[in-house]
Image (cartoon, rainbow, N blue to C red; front, side):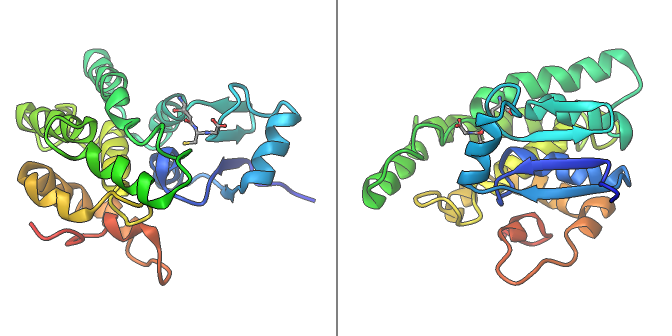
Length: 226
Ligand SMILES: N[C@@H](CCC(=O)N[C@@H](CS)C(=O)NCC(=O)O)C(=O)O
C-alpha cells in the first residue's frame, strides 16, 4: 500500500492550518488533508504523536513537524513564498512572530458551554478596546505602513500574507458564535487587503471552486463588501 508523502492533521476548519494547506497545494506536493475529530485528537495525543500536544501536525517523508508557524516556514521554502534576501525573510519572520498574540483572541472562549455567554464574550472582543479590535487595528496599521501591497513589506506575496489572510478572515466565516462579519465594515484598509490577496491569481485559483456550505467563502473575491 502506498501512503501520501505529506499528511496534514487538523480540525475540519481553516484555523491555524489553512495557510499550510494553501502552501502545500501551491508547492504541488502530494498531500492529504486529514480532518480530525475529538476522538482522533485524543488518540493522537495519547499515543504521543503530537510533539507539543496540539494540532496542526504535518507528517513529511523526513519526519513529523508541529507548530503552525514552523510548518508554514518549512512549506514557504517549497512554494516560493519566502523572500530569498535574508533580511526580508527575517522581516517575514518578525511579522509572523509579532502578530501571533493578536491571533489568539478566541482562546478562552471555546470552553464556555453556554451559547449566549460564549456569544457575549466574543462580541465583547470586538467592542472598543477589546482584544479583537486591538488586533484588527494593529493589522490595519501594519498594512498601511507596508511599502508594498503585501503585509510584511515584501516585493511579492509571502507566507505572512497566507497567515494573515487565512486567519483573520477565517474568523468571520460564521463558524464562531459572536464573531460577526459586519465588524469588518469598520476596517477599510483590511478589506482592501482582502481584495488584493483574494484576487492574487494563485489564491483565487485555489478557492475558485468550493463545496456547498464551505466555511472558506471568506477567502473568495468579493466575500466582504468593500
Ligand atoms: N502554537 C501552536 C498552537 C496550536 C493550537 O492552539 N492548537 C489547538 C487547535 S487551534 C489545539 O490543538 N488545541 C487542543 C488542545 O489544546 O488540547 C501552533 O501555532 O501550532
